Image 1 (cartoon, rainbow, N blue to C red):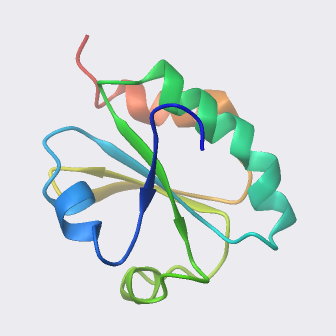
Image 2: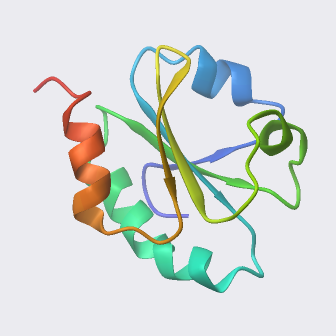
Length: 110
């Protein structure tokens, strides 16, 4: 994975996402999903651009089914943005880098 890009799992969900002191971006994906693969470069760029200000990572829905089920993830790719352990944005499908940045820039203090 790209530098700064995290791997979220059912096992680390609480500690890495819900208990995070900074905003968190979670890309729900699966290896067989073509649109998920096309979104990968955008997610990697966000991890680089927001390094230290936002946690950016991916959760493989094939390997981790509890968390997506609890969050009612019904289509992938779905990207959720969390702040203080609460979902504050949900972007479904392949979205532009600018759309993600518009969501994150509201949460990040320079």
